[in-house]
Length: 295
Image (tube, rainbow, N blue to C red; front, side, top):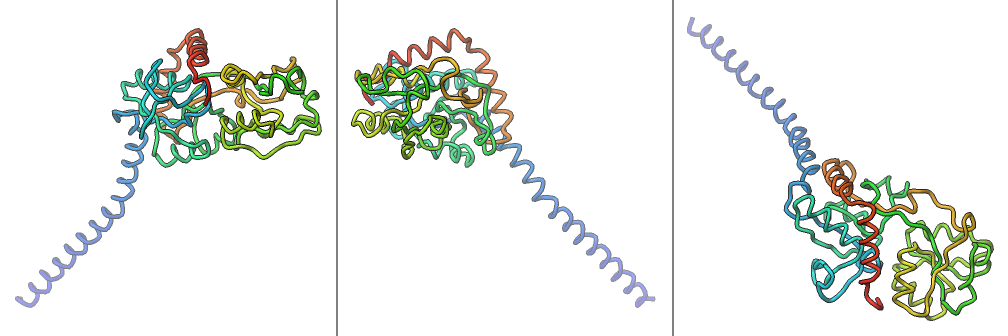
């Protein structure tokens, strides 16, 4: 009897241990998945709940964004030193204010902008960036906050100052910024001498001044900015139907963000919806008027 009781008790103990082991095993297997889901949810809402809105831009693409030495005309400190101003900065300020955040501008090279939001180093790209099909594969975009058209920046006393069509630039030495659709449309010019793309707009301005290039592709606000900042420059507005062919997304500008962050996208779009078209035009006019004389 004692032996039988001992066997029964031993069997019950083994069953209990087995239940405990398998129960813990199932719980442990589910825990990582639960933690992963919680982490994803937290990540999706992090920038909406955090006290700072970190925005990346080049700080070198006037009148959209530039670097200056003080806080004149509503400039914002750049992380690490100096100040940023321009159309993008003022739009970013309005977005941050609507979200109840402190705006932090992070100066970032053009090629590093998408990786910055993908990695979570910044929350938004507000940098005169077009929501092209290629970019939409890697990052999400807000609603558009500006729309422009393509122009050619040239020397005022140069051979192409009076150009009105792409045909007029036949044989010209033309460039544009690296990794932008501006560079791809150069091929629409017949027999063009398409030069190596350049890193940024200040570099292209220097190249144009020196005579290394005949012109560079830009958007109208930057063309106005360049011609007002440098007396030797002008910009060509093409006759209707005689200029570059581009999609609506190519000539629009929107804020970029990490894929899947719908909470942030909704907050940004809500803020943008409260900025009227008249106010956007006024902000751009102020940016052109307030830009540094020479970058």
